[in-house]
Length: 111
Image (cartoon, rainbow, N blue to C red; front, side, top):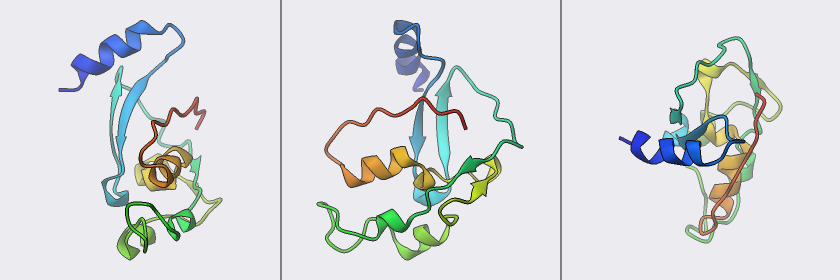
């Protein structure tokens, strides 16, 4: 249970409205958020696509994502409904994947 870790982090900083752990899950999406959030199913987010993954990563010289994972992504600039949420299409995921040995802090997000 990650609530034991997320709750004190959330309470420590008065400016934080929510804190979460988002899993790439091969583009299928998954998250744990504290406090629990209700997502507006009609408010889309803008996809950055997955073309960023075609490149060199220090962990693997050929690719970051598999073709199957890349095919789950919406084209760059597409407006995507939350029920089709794919963390691979978000800038925070791209930044972490391209810099695997650095801590990434992202946000705030309004979509």
